[in-house]
Amino acid sequence: MMKQEQLEEYIEVQERKEIVYRIYHNLSLGYDKGAIYVSTHHAEIIVRKLLQHIEEIVLNMKSKRVKDNWFIGSPLENILCKYFGFTSHTRRWDQEYVEIEMHHNWGFWCKNFEVDENGLSNLEILIVLLYKRCVISMEKENLFKWKHYQPDIILLTVRWYLRYNLSFRDLVEMMEERGLFLAHTTIMRWVHQYGPELDKRIRRYLKQTNDSWRVDETYIKVKGQWMYLYRAVDSEGNTIDFYLSKSRNHKAAKRFFKKALRSFHVSKPRIITVDKNPAYPIAIEQLKKEKRIPIGTKIRRIKYLNNIVEQDHRFIKKRIRSMLGFKSYKTSASILSGVEAMHMVKKEQIDLQDQSVQNQNIFINQLFGLTA
Image (tube, rainbow, N blue to C red; front, side):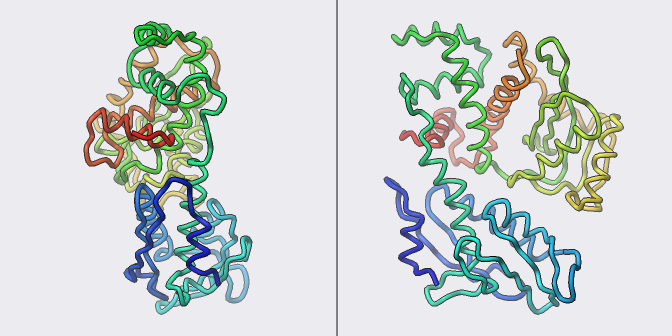
């Protein structure tokens, strides 16, 4: 068994407060009361969302039978394999217990969520691993190594370009007023590098969306050819996800839905409102057969209900229009991911107490390891 001191040493990070473990036995798993962690700083948000997700998965566990008393392919397996490299199995259960066994890929034990003498359960170990792999690894990575300018200057220009209708040359002039002389291509490379990274880091802090999806696609011209930007918002206008595709068919729609469903801040859809595009029903039915979307999910084709997502297109289209077009699929995808990330910040989808622009900027700097 791993001792508590060893566990704390395992997840320790330089210049960061030690994670405080507080165990609550109130996560009903049917078999045993699981232990809930609440940690300090931004790990608390991740832990709570993961626990909510695990609780939903375990309580609604459905699997395909493989052998006599063994089942494989449970929804929990996707979570464990995706984040921890485990292979999970579920033994046949009744209303009194739920048993889960995992292989010892990393030297941890398989005791069906039992709590050891130190008060640490297997469920807690999994949560610690999620924290380590999704947060600490990002903090240790130095994205500004070998850069000739300070990280705060780099993030300032990236934020301004992604949020406001400014060109690279506009930013060059604005930086000259501050005594900094940059080439517009330098800022362009920063945007291409840090735009997708911002989208990646910001997603774990997004507020939970509701289960009413509004889906639509809009046209984006890339190197003289039309491409399709699939976007989805919930009934309150919060961005669910986006996907840039070279084609407009059921395969592209399916890829978009699969990408959206992988996000932790996204709720499984109860109703999906779409336009007259025949590709959406085909993609949704295929995902229902694959059990990625609930069977009871309804498809609704009411045009005025999709006005909210069409209006949300305006900000993206307005920002793209001032860029005078994209030159390649790769650069367009990287810039759009950053633009969408800043749009979510602007719509106050980040879980902050004070949603002022100043606090939003401080939050983004902290995402990249910069102090306020």
